[in-house]
Length: 236
Image: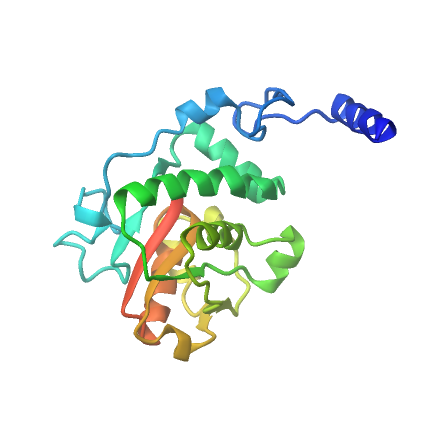
């Protein structure tokens, strides 16, 4: 026990844990050490829900009248803004610095948000998939980790409903119009029998132009999904 304590102390001394938002060393007495208390206070969820296709405020994040035929997403919940620097840093650390444990505080923010603002009972969860090539490189699907946490806390079934069958340039590197073109024909429904007549919560990390999530929602509806509600930690 003593040797283990000394070993952990040395590791902590050489490789201290730093906040993903501000990069300050966090105290080992804090329960959540991946996002410090100062940065957590900056992560203030929006009081409003918006149309999945534009910035119009809508009831329950439904498409506005102008956009109702332009998206396959029935409702969208995104508590944070990706335009905030702290949010950007945390999500980039989660996706690109391989800090998979950030799924815990990220999921907590989402759970607090949807428990207050949305009734997601009796729905099923599908996460936006990664291509096998990118999954092998990263080691985990960031959307799937969030989906697992939400599934556990809300006691909702996860359906492995989608696969990414084509490897293409990452959406983050493209402009809006090119994102729409880049994502076509990328996804496939794996189990139409499990999707049919179900209400689906579609989980991703960031909702930027909505091209990826909208394409996933379209595929799910083509295979019989009744409703698709999008859920992401931040909107670009």
